[in-house]
Image 1 (cartoon, rainbow, N blue to C red):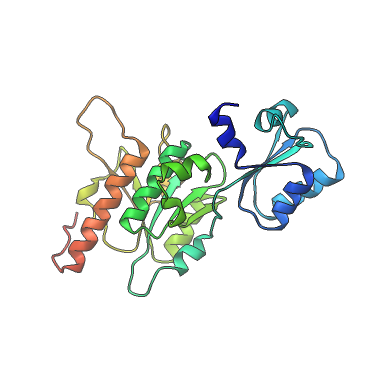
Image 2: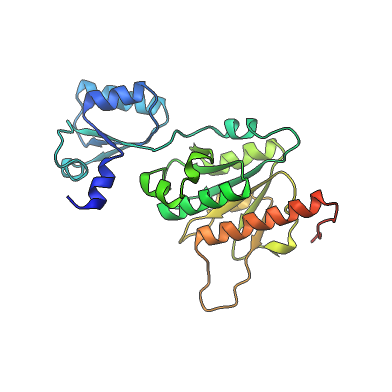
Length: 261
């Protein structure tokens, strides 16, 4: 079996009883894959448990499950397990120490696991309090993400939410300023004030920020592009913005002031 397939098997639980018990035990699960149009009692119970815990369930053909576990009897269901448990947004905010200002990253449909891993690596290096991703249409925490993060996955809390736009509303109620990265942003990112309680919002590799997410941001900032390519890799854009926040916060702590727009 190719090494890539062997690595994939490491984060898969197959079979009705193993999947059911993993759900009951609170294992961090990214997604349940279940055979389409097969509604036996055990599978219905697994479906209900997953729904109760907010874990996505995807109906697939039997041959799709066979590809995940070619040498294991999957009994019509497998669970894709995260290498680390997710937290809640409330957990992230509660962990901010007295005297610190919250610093978060929201990723709007980042689908490349290597990009997610690179963002986690930057977040750890820069002291970001946590990263927020959506449950659907986004790369979850996987072994590929863990490897790309170079170990940062162990230190950066990641919350997975049902709706990024609604989460933005929640963060605003907690006094957090939402800064979205967008090619048509009003200001170049280094001209914007980025020194308070803040969450950076980074869009997907191809589509950028969704309309509802963009509308909820307090400000949209852009990265100046002088070359022939009209966008940067999402993790590169995130790193530039994150370290501009770090720079401005350091200036504020040194009482040097931060330029206003």
